[in-house]
Image 1 (cartoon, chains in turn red, yellow):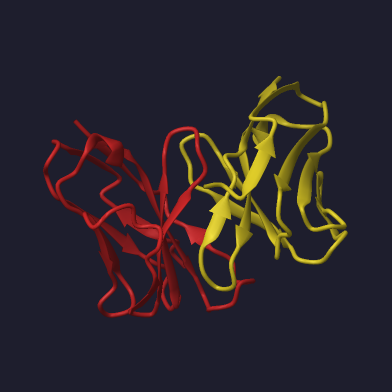
Image 2: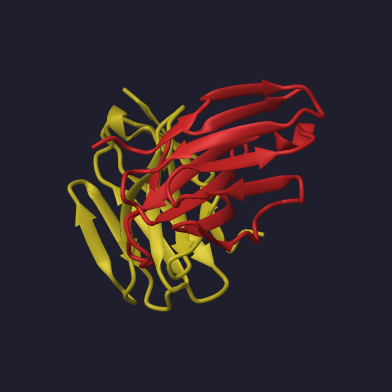
Length: 115
Length: 110
């Protein structure tokens, strides 16, 4: 079946604008993760959902970042009042179950550039 | 901050040469995962190691988990141009987040 999809693939925002990034996980996958990847670095954890429940949001850098997954499938990461330091690739990943051994499948990412 | 450190940051090899990247932690790891990210691509899961001293092979790739579970390595035998990319190690916490290293970027000269 189809993999994880993300939209838009590229987003340019002016400083201060709000943005919304969408993630469509693999159908039936219970777990969903958001990561932020700065240039030349590894992905940094932002938040984790199990179905519609947000079980861990410890990685969200500030209260400008908000994520939701209201029906336990599609997820949206919203960034309010974007700043230049928010420029990065935002990766979404999903896994079938809730075990630590379940493989995380990553989407292609959304590259956000804040001017 | 990062819990896993990777060395080297970059590695340039001639096609056919071997390549090794190392992942180190100051604390005991519950597991270690390895991912490959092609240029412009997204991380793709390669393998997970859980047991002390574990060794797993995938064709030309050999993965090791140290006896003390504080380090791991990925070794590629006879590199090919298709091996180009950045290799990340990560620790997975139960069913939640993974903490990634900053990766080793491999370039292969044909």
